[in-house]
Length: 197
Image 1 (cartoon, one colour):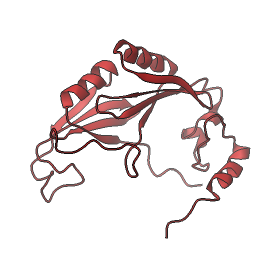
Image 2: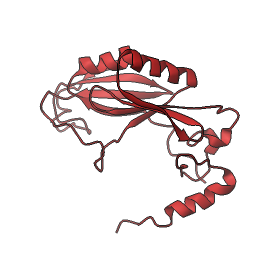
Image 3: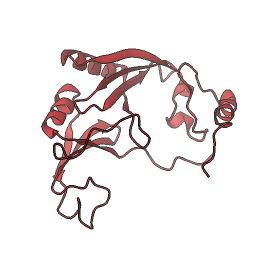
C-alpha cells in the first residue's frame, strides 16, 4: 500500500454572513484561538486573480486554530448575497468532526451546555468512540468525538498512524476494524460500487 497523499487537512474554508457572531461562538464558546485575519485583496474576488475565493471583493477571511496543525477558516459573505445551502446536497459539506481527548470532549460539552446550545449526545458511534453534535450560528453541523482507551487499542484508530498502509475503508458504527477482517469487509462494502461512465 502507498502512503497517504497528504499529512492531513490544512484548513476548511466555510462561509458566514456575520463574522462577529461566528467569532464570538468559536472563540468564546468553543475556545478556538484566532490565528490569522485578512481581507481578500482587490482582484481576487471577482477579478482575474480569483483562485477559488467567493466572488466578492474585500471580504474578511479569518482563520481559527482547530488543533493538530489544522485550521478552520471563514469568509464573510455580504448579508443576503447568497442563500443558505443544504448540507445534505451533493457537493456540499454535511458536517465537520473534530477529534479531541476525553478531557477536551467534556470541556466542549460543558461549554455548549453553559451557552445553552442544543446538542445531541454523547452518542456511542462504535469502536469505543463517543460524539456530540450541534450547530454553529451559521447552521454548520459540528461533531466532537473522542475514543476511549486509544493507547490500549491501536488497531481501533481509523485514519491514524496505526492504520497507515491498510485499505482506506472505515468501519460502520459498532464494528471494529482488525487487520485479519479488514480486507474482507472492504471487499464486501465495495463490491456493488459502480464506476462512473
